[in-house]
Image (cartoon, rainbow, N blue to C red; front, side, top):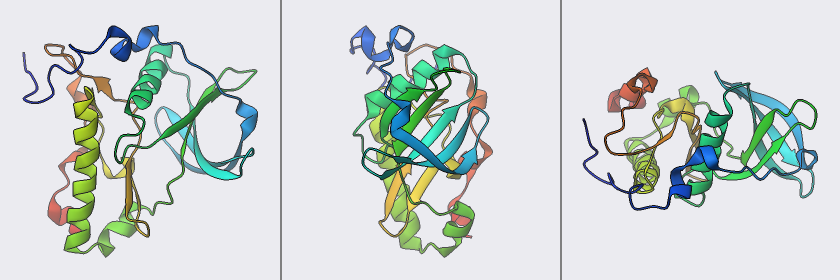
Length: 201
């Protein structure tokens, strides 16, 4: 059995309600507070839209989840709530669901990011070091909270270069770390193996 070299016992010392996402009761917000503006992406488990909070006109991101096991949705919600306020972790603002279909949506802070294929070639050596460090801060924070992201890749790292702001997004494959537990290791993306030169070029 493998065991993490750091932060291995975080969840051992936390109360069960911290990591027992299956028992978590979701507090639903009001879907009518949000309007879809335009589609910005899609993944295996969701479709993502730029949206607006009609109560205050703030931009947001609306992640509409495709039909998946309730357990998976609860896990992502619980992890995002536990990580709320963590450095460079995307902030979950609300959780809503369609009144008729019961389809859940996650409401996130808006990040004015540029496609990495366009952005990365413009980076200086300093930019690369800066954003790698910002990403490592996010990973260190989630690990210190007993949580593994498990899907770090350029698509899941939003960068607002003008504000030099980075956010680690898409926690759908994240897991709570428990020493001795076996995890499916096939979730890792080929993008995990990007080298410094790949990012630079």
